[in-house]
Amino acid sequence: MGEARKRRASTALSNGAGNGSAHHPAPAAPPTRDTLRSFLLDYTFPLFFVFGGCCTNAWALESLLQGNPDVGTALTFCQLAFITLQSLPSFLTLRSFVPGLKPRAVPIYRWMLQVVLLATTSLLNNWAFSYRIPLTIQIIFRSAGLVVSMIIGFVFLRRRYSRAQVLAVLIVTSGVVLATLSKPISPSKSSAAHSERDIQTYFYGIFLLAVGLVLSGFLGLLQELTFAQYGPHWQECLFYTHALSLPIFAYFLSDVKSGLVALSKFSSRSIMGIPSLYLILLVNAASQWACVTGVNQLTSRMSSVSTNLVLTIRKALSLAMSVWLFGNGMNAGLAGGGALVLAGTLLYSKAAQQQQQGQGQGQGQGKGKERASQGASKAEAKDKKRH
Figure 1: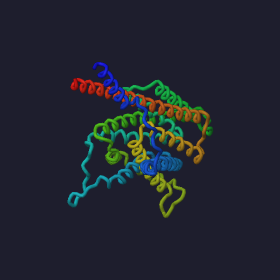
Figure 2 (figure 1 turned 30 degrees about the vertical axis):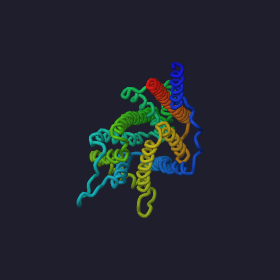
Figure 3 (figure 1 turned 90 degrees about the horizontal axis):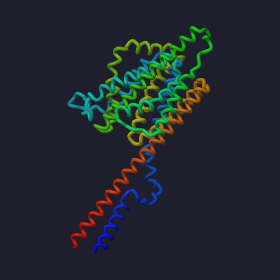
Figure 4 (figure 1 turned 120 degrees about the horizontal axis):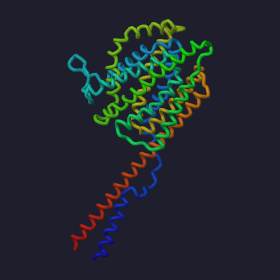
């Protein structure tokens, strides 16, 4: 009897283990036409918005800056206003004859601090152009957001990172520092006083970008905590954070007006009576909406690792466009810094993917052992009932 009991328990144990992660699944079936169609429907528009919208936004931004680099406040206001107006119809509802807003999924107070961070970050990034920060430098410098996100995750969310991830962040940091220090001083200003003044102006702009980078990291933290508690309501986040940012610009109204007037003066030609830079400003605002929408859709459909890879490729394309289309100089420091940032980002994505796979396998093995234990217990119980 004891031998029979052991055989039954052993059989149940092997069956239980077979249901766990130790079992090798059958080869996956080749993708069908329906699977391909589903993939195209899910990812075509987000990828089009990211690459088409973000790269077009970079082109329009640089075109505006060539006209007048001091339009940062007006540019930020127009971007926020366009996204607000475009998103508004989705949140309007008719109550009797007076339109109102649909009920929110997230309390309004959860958006308020994010509003301040978003408006401040946008203003700082656009103000930096007034201090002669080339777009190529800004693209690479803002890649240091990976470093800020890791530090914030470690300090506030108690996250732990592998050695490969830490190494990747150090590589990204080295690339950002190398690219930042590679900005050449204009040879037309040969005097020491002019050169020193240029350096001070440049690094003040870098300081603005650094502050904006830190604030952007905290904005991401607040959004992550909000989505974790209330669900990924990114459309609501997009609308309320942009709409509630607009009243802040009452304080900067004169800057907005002067920026719009400057665009009119610096427009080289008109199209149907409209200054050309105004049309480019409209393209910039519309492409900003497309870029933000695409990034949010990718975040909700892909892993953070995959999204990070897509955005890294997009930044590389924007950098290439800035060099090829606008003749921005590419020196050894800038090229080397960009290469280090790209390599570090890819290494971080690979390390994060391996970490996620390791966690998934650990959970699967745990579940397999639990099923095996349950199977053995059931076999023992049945055997006791029989005898």
